[in-house]
Image (cartoon, rainbow, N blue to C red; front, side, top):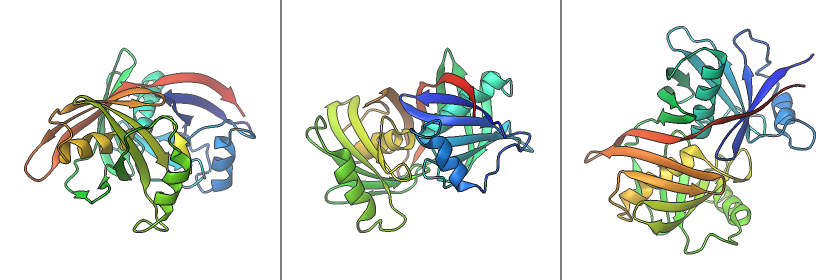
Length: 257
């Protein structure tokens, strides 16, 4: 069987994208997903995303990690599937779609995709880190220097350690550049390695830095290894809302495998 796919990337976070409106892809075949994401034997990607029909929204997003398992929300993936839907003619400049964590709104203009994330009602401040869920669970930890830092070693250790254990958490290491800008490096569970960028991760970092008083800004630039993203949000006494993840999303190539 031949499968047509597209490759998209958002600040270096890359995805195999498949138009599954005609149910051409077997979602139960985790080995096939892992094969397509393999950088040596398959296409190569941090994850695989299916665009499917939805009864009341513009489309449905189904996201798989590189290990082949369906996963929690992926922010950069949500931005990339919005660009993909625009390319396919499913949407024009605005979208409402369903992902595993619920409904999302998105806009696209001049290659920049803005994705509305879910509200965050709980942020946990610990002695060495902050923990919160932005559609995926995130451990946020400040480090003085990120250059030369062994993200894979320390990220894996935290991801598999207490209190996360089997379910695990994504792990973000953060260095402050200014009140408006922070550098971020992320270890992603499911990929089990550092990725060049993580959308839910930079969202978590922006909120965490505001929560612990490292910034008073509500529009923050996050410098990742793959490029800059922005996170805008509003606050109340008990929650963060109207959260938007903003940045480029680009089609890299189309192929048949």
